[in-house]
Image (cartoon, rainbow, N blue to C red):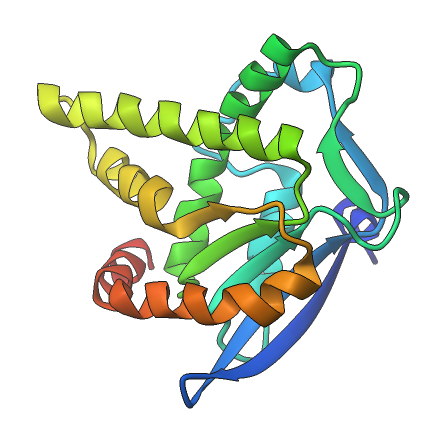
Amino acid sequence: MPTAQDAQLEFSEFETQVFGAERRALVVTPTARIRVGRSRLTAPAAGGKVSGVDAEVVRRLGEWPKPVDVVLLRSWGGDESRSWGFDPDLRADEVDVLAYAIMRDQLAFFRDVIGLGVFALVATDLSAREFDAMLRATTRLSRELSGRAKSGSATPDDEVDRWILEHLSLWTTRPYDEFVLQGLPELFALVDRHRGRLADLSAARS
């Protein structure tokens, strides 16, 4: 029976040849108008657990019949009724708090997909509002984790999370079709430069 998450997400596969090698992406597209608002601001931290929607992505990755190199998370599925974003009523300061909460709680999701052999996650089709907020949140988290490393209080997960924020999670305002044509070769070149480190992280999380 389809779950609530199934009703909001569509999963498809994209295959291409890049630098003479076959590459595969799992494409996740919203099938509903998903807006994240103030209720998320008052929700408790996930505490190392992935959200229901993220858990559905992890489940699909684990069940996918072929290995997946990257996950492409689309924020726009063709029209407003198939899109993801922040509630337009949020103030600028609320948007920053929300973006930070999302990135903080999604680190568990990123660790899980590394354990499944995924080498990059890219969110495409973002508006400037979402892109800028997520980039600020990523920078803030990276600095916090770097601070823990310098003080000697970092945990093993902190070290993985810092590497993920710097190399694995990517955000772009490019439309999905444009990114596939122009961004994927550059993305896979980046992946190949870090493939050894990613393989080590994948083995550690499996």
